[in-house]
Structure formats: structure tokens, C-alpha cells
Image (cartoon, rainbow, N blue to C red; front, side, top):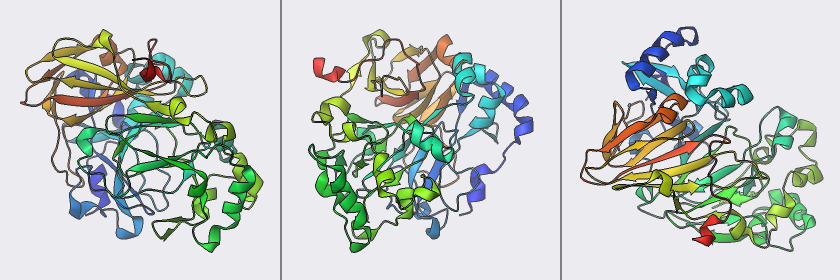
Length: 420
């Protein structure tokens, strides 16, 4: 199937103003988004994100299988051979499409708030479903300081494992995170020196945590992690930088180029520099789980009879509130008015209903290029005014929504789940 279908009916950037105004007026500040699919050449699709099996290689087998769906994204996917819009979300109105990125550029204050737009000049975060059949390489994402060396931005991220998208564990329901306390930089150096000798043994220096549905993790930049095979909802900073530190995964070779792709070219063989991009203290933290693990917390201030709003991603990274996420469950026949202090990206994961004037429906199967009714961008204008949500089905209506930086005054602190 042609990838051109994803941008079929696209409105040029210069003409976005008029259609954006119409879409915002018609939707009461809500924008319908279409599915944004991203392939990865070095991964194996987990087949749980509702994409029709025959479309898993719709970008071409040489590009790899589709194992990611990105939400409310204005961030480009950093893939070789990418199509021009890879990773970018499209808004849909009356059969025409326009980029969410162009919409934010046109009306940043209405869409994300004047404060956030003035500071970042963009929607600086995104989220995605990551769905792999097995584990992926032990890798890290650069800090802001290190990413800046190659004119990129750093990438802290977070995980949540939605039960609705995890009917099976797939091949390895564990994630290696960080390094075993007592590990030395020389230990990691030996692994890099052994890159072409087969399995370089980096996992021997780490510990694996069993993944639990309905829970999550914070992953600061510079921290090694080898995500396991649960389908993961991942609110994160708007960047796609990484460095793979593992040479063999499930018998597949990981090229050195994927270790150094976001490092200065003159440092591609400098092992001390490469290891120096790791946040050493966070990797060897003796209380790694307590520092980074997340259990959901009910937000009683936004919950009520027939509906429950839970924090699923919270806490700060190096003292900064960079992103957060909540899970809203509305019981059959119930209604609520959702008021948030900031814009958010919404994905429906169970049931059907309405959000304002837009229908919500969780798809059973999606063809590549097909539009759906499960994804919405809730603008700052709509969020702060209030959005009515109604469950019109016979099962719970469940939606996940993520927020940008400094969105909440009442965000739970790191480790708040331990005090419940």
C-alpha cells in the first residue's frame, strides 16, 4: 500500500489558517487526529496496536515493520529513508488533513497556551504506542547537553503498560534497566571493545524487572534500558535521539552506527566520550526501582460518580516537570466534564462515547491509511473551558491523555505510589 495515502488530501501550510479556524469552531477546540504509523528497521512488530497484519510492512519491507503509533506528535521520526511526514500527526476536518505542527505554528496560544508556546515555540512533547515482539537493545537517550552537540534535543521518557493493549506478553516481558550497583566504567568499556565478537555482554551488567500491566516507569536521559515485550504507552520529550549499547539482540546484530548516530562524528570511536554520555549515578542507583517505578494514583479532584481519573505518569526528572499522563475511565451511561490546566493528546483505548462534538470509538482493526475515531488533540482552549465526555457504550470508556511541561500544580511527586 502506498505511503502517500497517509497525507492524501493535505492542506498546504500557507492555507492552514482558515481550515484550522473551521475545525476549532466545529469541534469546540477539539481536533480529530489520524493514525501516525512509524516503522523501525531493526525491530519486530508485536501486532497489538490494531494495525491490519497485511499492512505491517506498508512502508516497504526494507524500511522494517510498523511497531509504533505516535500520538499528537509534532516531532519527526529519525529514521533512515523516512517519508517526509514520518512521525508527524495530521488533523482531519471534512475530509481534508493538515499537520498538527502547522496548526500549533498558526495558533500556538489557542492550541497549547501562550506560556508554553512562548517558551518552546512548539508542542515540545509526544507520546506513542511501542509494540515489539521481543526485547530491544540496551540503549540510552542523550541528555539535553549531549544532544545539543549534534543540534538535537535530549529525550527523557516514561512508560505505562495499558491492559487493553496487552492481551499477550509476547516473547520477553521483562526490561533491563540501569546497571548493577558496583559496575565500573571499565566494565562497560570492555563491552564496547567486544562489539564485533558477538554478544558484547552488556546485559550481564544490568538487572531485569518484570513488567506489570497497569504500571509504569520514568526513564531519565542517559539511563540504559532494554524495553521488554509489553505494548507500552510512552509520553516523552519531543526528540528521537538514542544510542544502542548492545551488539546482539535475539541473534540479530546491532550495527555500531546505531550506538553513535546522535554523537559528533569525530567521537564515533572515542569510547570514553561514548560512556561519558551515560548518567552514571542514575544507572548504578541502589534504589533504582524506588526512584523510577510508577503505580497509578487516583486524582480525587477530577474524579466523581461514574468516572475515575488516575495519574499514570507523574514525578519530575532532575527537578523538572517535563511531561505527565492520566487515565480516565467513564462507566457505561455516565458523563463527566473534563477540565485540565493544559492541552493534552488523547487516545481512546477501550469503549465508545463522545467527547464534546466528536465521536469516540476504539477500533478493532485499522487499515494503513484508514482514519479512526479514537484520537483527539484537546487544545488549551478546550481543556481550560471544560470538555464533556459521555460513555454511550456497554463497557467502560477508557482514554489516556498526556500533557506537556509544567502543566500541573498538583502533580504527585516521584515515588508517591509508595505512600498510598
